[in-house]
Image (tube, rainbow, N blue to C red; front, side, top):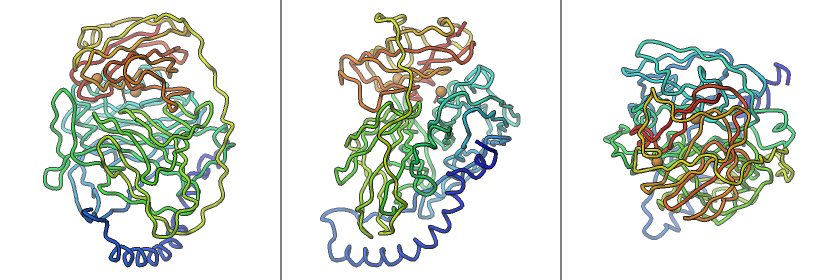
Length: 469
Ligand code: C2O
Ligand code: CU
Ligand code: CU
């Protein structure tokens, strides 16, 4: 890729094109909305409370080549003039979406304008210990920390969030989280929807006190009263007739989402945490644990002007995001059927190590100790790790320093899910389940952590140190 491509590649040129689309669409939408409101008056849905829908926020994009990321208090419009105090990256909630290219070196710094320690971790990025942004590298108020590392992995949706021990849950819940999209040449060949047709969706829950986000949670986890997508309450997104690519992140502290579309249409899953799946798969429901990501294609080719489809969570019974048809025809996209090839890890058939996630704060009976090394792992060797739930789930298990492949699940759901193929960095462990992964650390040697991504469990100590040697 040339520098020109990096600066003005599909996403960015699509962003520039956004205004053009909006201008043209704004006109069409006005007519669609008028028609829609007439229809609504004629056909109120029985018993349904009328909800005012707010335009979905799309975080601004940012370059990771020379970034300044300030963590500090800010205010944010959660939609319809609900102005909340938040903790934000560069004043944005969610934080800006970084877009970087495989093979390039990212560099920049975080500046801590909070009144407490923080550190920013690049979830899903394979980086060395010094740049990992783990709990050993917290930054005191008023100080900053520099980062510099090459992107050595394939195209995927990763994300960044705070990781200070015992303070992660609150900082994330009050707003500190953002997307980090890695692009590469393989992805470009697939000719996927881009610009306004590629939309990040950071899904989470929230509780308000007055207009403000309010954080209070027991060790079992934060249980928010309302859903929120991209920091927007009751969001809606106007969609043209065509395919959309949704880059979905479960950014909740402690809530698993079971995603479905209200019209029963399938999601075409093309990727997850570690990039593209070996083969696309169509499903009508997806269970997504905290920290996990999805790359989805949704077909709106037949959605008429003013018609609506809802993205729902079947477990909570929540309406997450309303799609409203504009009637405008989108550029033609052919969903790929052949995906980039990936290596299938081959490893031991018996577990190299077993980790039991006990209570709400322990792994193999022990709470996290920053200064204790819990185990060492040889560099470049495929190991089989077994994760076992001791109850009190869900426990989405996340490993720093390498991606892995999920190879089996017994107990509980008793099977691998179609969206768990390929490379992952977080795997959902429900009560009664035992999950095996194959993992190989071939990026860097050094100290990393393994932890539950139910953030209150993590803060209470469900985390372990290990060293790749
Ligand atoms: Cu998303 Cu160790 O974190
Ligand atoms: Cu991580
Ligand atoms: Cu847990």
